[in-house]
Image 1: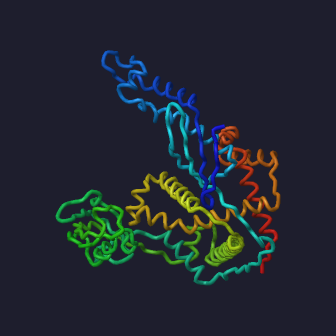
Image 2: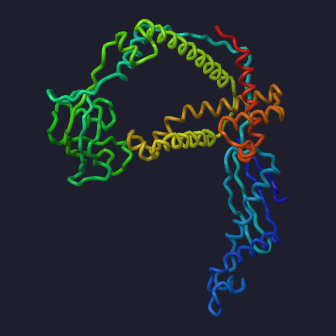
Length: 426
């Protein structure tokens, strides 16, 4: 075996000393030579035909060292990790500490491991369930939304633009008298007061009328995504082409019949109240569950590596990209529209990521504490459920979700049910 030593250098931090024999290194050197020689020219030989010793003499004896190490280091490191029995939470950093033809190669893999976790008092957790009463104001909000859906769009030609209006504009932005990329659009529909544009832009359109052409001065936020514009003053030339507003209908039986499955306003409002009460009940249940999980986290002890939180944030940013993709919006464009940077996007996810990591660790430890097991039959049933949900062949799902991962998730689900079923709801 190539693993020579496992050294615990800090909490959740290990260094693996890995040695690769001179014989194995020589095999890798020969493979690296055979792979690279077609691209190497040596005087007196056709390209790709020069002997290895001549190439090493011409370019240095270590000319193939890096390529040779790259051929075996991943397998050697993975084998050493398996042998060590360590459970890593991220890829190790690997460095070559010694290398020679005579003695082979020595590697050092610095590994961050899953922390030891202790969870106490996770049974019988006491939480309060509060169901918020549905008010007349809540019902009115739903009524207003219905009226919004049935609104007519009316052209405004007898007054200047106001907040709440939608304006159709051509605009072009200039910094220091020069037009900048991404600052121009035609026939752009903008709802004034929506906060869609940078501060000061929408406010300075208010008060202008259809047909006006005018300039507005703004200053980009210091945190603006495009560095060249961050904190910079700019001038936008505006051509206000049209002003429209929404005209909301009155709520009466005729409108209800046209817009819903009900015949009268009273029937519609009764249904709204019922659905809001059901939603309030579900929200209360969700809050109870969240409070239970918060107490589980409070009752856990662990020194968690920061990389675990960072990795979860990375996953959440990736999930955001996947949600944006079907809309044809890239992450860069999203950040530009919202005036965010990658740093601020990551900060928005940081607290949630920390909770998720801590809860998962706590639940995995509870699985161990309670000796929770998942049968092969339960795992197969979960594969079948996933296949049905995603309309995929089960064998295909198995190719990228190993059974160990399925069983781990099902075990965590059982731990969740154990905690919830033993909780005391007041």
